[in-house]
Each structure stands twice: as structure tokens, then as C-alpha cells.
Length: 336
Image 1 (cartoon, rainbow, N blue to C red):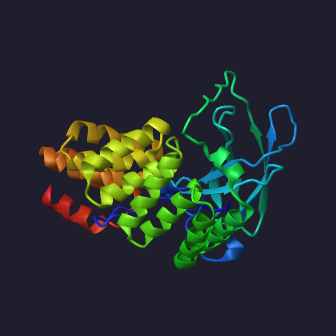
Image 2 (tube, helix red, strand yellow):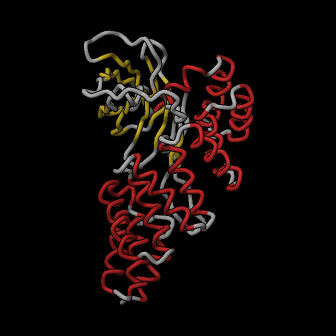
Image 3 (cartoon, one colour):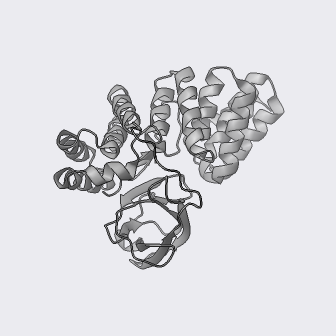
């Protein structure tokens, strides 16, 4: 199962950050490079803490500093691969059964020129593994993965390849086929939602994300993605509740904090919006400089002109050619 994305999308009001999915180019995808031979690859293997080879498939996420996330699923020997990556620093995150294993993270640098970086990642058991309760109706991603029929998995993998190549319509077609074969395919519902979101089909995207959450209430990606859709639909109160849930699943997500800050700004929860937007920037760095733009708007709303101007100037310092740069310059002129 390859490249199921979590994608932060461009908001109607100009947001230029990315959101997340379960495995495409994303919520969440390296920025396109000028030529394929300028890119690099990762080839990795996951092993158990005692050095034993894997005997099951695990989910592998690739995150870059821009907040983008690619996802794939290893084979039953723990082997995985990401290809066509823009050179730079990334983090590889490996997630097995959440009740049994810690999430493992490894920093990795990708070189260009077609070079392949080889990586070994250790999956560690939790010291106090919790027994799953009989009759629990929350199914983990790994449990779902074990039940996915081969034909559905094949359709999903094909969809992921098309998503990686920005062939949205073909990706949607294969994801629908995967779901028709296996309706409880949580990651396929999530990724179908991200593709529909790219097309601007917000209502259908929300339906797919809600279905994914029904299948796994602890799945972060569809929860975040649903929050993004709700922000775009201007359902800010519901968006804030959904993004709070996303942060309860992954408390240090700059993407969730950014969109939560935007939702709160629009529900006039100014003080909390300020905290979340600052946290998004502190966690995500210059890749989340758009948080500074919204902080500028927030300070204008509060009548704090000096702070508003400082925020807009910092935003332009980080990204002089950002989507909102013309508006930021206009407001700086007004705030002189």
C-alpha cells in the first residue's frame, strides 16, 4: 500500500501549507523537483528490537520539513521504499500494532542524482503493552491491513502510484474499486477523501473521512483531514472540535495546530487561536510561516497594530513570494 497522502490543501483564503492522508503524496508529499535525475530514493528495512527480521507488514510514514507526509506499507519482511524524493532532510516513522509497539522515528538525509539512501529502523515493544479488550469496536490500522483482500490491496497500490503522479481521476477510480472489494478499507477511504479534497469536492471528501474515522476512531490522518475540510466549508465550530480530537491523537502536529488556530480565529476564541498559531509555527518552522500571516490578522482584529506589522514582516521574511505576500505587504503599508 503505497503513497497514501495526508494533505494540507490550499484554502480559498490563500493557505499554502500541506495536509495528511494514509499514503499518497500529501496531508499531507515532497515538492516537485525540476528533473527526475535530481531526486533520490530511500530503501529501508524494519527489524525487531532483538534483531529478528519482521514477519508482518507495518505502516511507514515519510515526513519532510514542509509538513508533507507520504505513507506506504512494508512487505511481510519489513522492507519498504520511497522513490523520486527531493533532496533534503526527512523523518521516517514506523508504526506497528499500537497496543504492542512504540512508534519508531529515524532522521534521514536524501541526496540527489538518483542516489539511494539505505536505512534500518528498529521497532521496539512497549514496556507495558495493553491487552485489547474483547468486543472492542475500534479496529487499528494494522488489524485492518491483515484482513484486506489481495485484490483490494492491489487496487490500493495502483491508486497510490497514480496519486503520486498527480493523476487524481485514475487514483479515485482505483480507490473506489478497492473499497468496493473491501468496504472496511480504512486507508482507502482516507485516501479517496484526500483525492476528492484535491478536486474541491468537499462534501464527498468529508463523507470518506467520516467513514474512515468510523472504522478506526484512533486514526489521526482522517481526523485531521476532516478538520481541514470543515475549515474550508467554514464550519468553524465543528472544525475546532474535530481538530481538538486530532491533537488528542497526535499532540505535536503543526498541521492540526495551524488549522485549529484558523478555526478558533473565526469563532472569535482569540487567545486560544493565538496560542495554537504560535505553536504551529514553533513546531513546524518556516514551512508553517503561514501561521504568521494569520497571527497578523489576529493582531489586527485585536487592534494591536505593532504586533500585526511584526507578524506580517516575519511572514514575508520567511517566504517573500508566498501566496499571501501581496496582501501582507498591503497591510504592512496600512500599519505604518
